[in-house]
Image 1 (cartoon, rainbow, N blue to C red):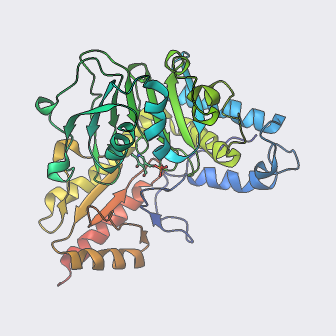
Image 2 (image 1 turned 180 degrees about the vertical axis):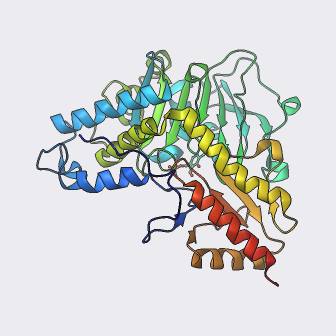
Length: 378
Ligand SMILES: Cc1ncc(COP(=O)(O)O)c(C=O)c1O
């Protein structure tokens, strides 16, 4: 398999002439070299005379694709050897029930959850089918504009695990540190929207999951990174497809997995390596977000949704002075080649998603547009 070309994302200038800047919250922008490589490999991968979409998930070509993908993810993510890395389906949404279903043994048990937005509250809702849920802290009262302050946290005694959502895609908040529990219970994290956007010390987590469609690849596949001992401790009395063990112990191919999605995750991991790894990625993501937040801080026209110390590097949410102007902003931005800026219906306003593959030139283009829009007579 050919490896992806060196990143062109640092190159100055515009998006390719037939592409726009894509601020979508997910599925989101993918690295250009990955898309170009995929175009070739759809036709003929590894000189096999067959495209990646048409190969058996148990043949030698896909064996290599999958093995390289896992090796590259382990290398670029610095994932310890005693952690399983595997793929599941059903979206990150299915993880909301798979976690409690696999690890809760008795309905009388309690699990601790932080409620920091829609995805966290979806997890809470599903967990309640299996156990008691203790909400350690919630940002609901302030429309999820912050990560709850430490002095508001109320842990339960000896929970089965602690769950949190590292980046709140809809509202634009992000945890700056891992919230550990006094009992040292397992830590479970939904990292769907900031996975592999910065270095992560996986040894401090017990199970992490992420839908691929923001920083890792296309929709249709979820990556799980989990301590082998935790996976082995999971319940056996579940339907086969709903046991983590099934997927971890069968190299993610107990059934036919989404082979093309896995291939694209593998190519994205190669691209991350060629980019300089996660430290370089973090620096780039910080630089991009700073351009936009600095401008928002200086403007008296736009308002950010989130408290400064909780700001996400991945999803930047902001508003114009009125809803009408928000609508006008999105319409005119689209005409200017700045796509998918409309905020989620629960926050309104705008949301600029600046995932790994989003180019810095696009952030500059957005700020230039914002300046022009602000200076118009409204
Ligand atoms: C943080 C987070 N968790 C979970 C989900 C749900 O993912 P899916 O649509 O793949 O089920 C999303 C989707 O955007 C998300 O951003």
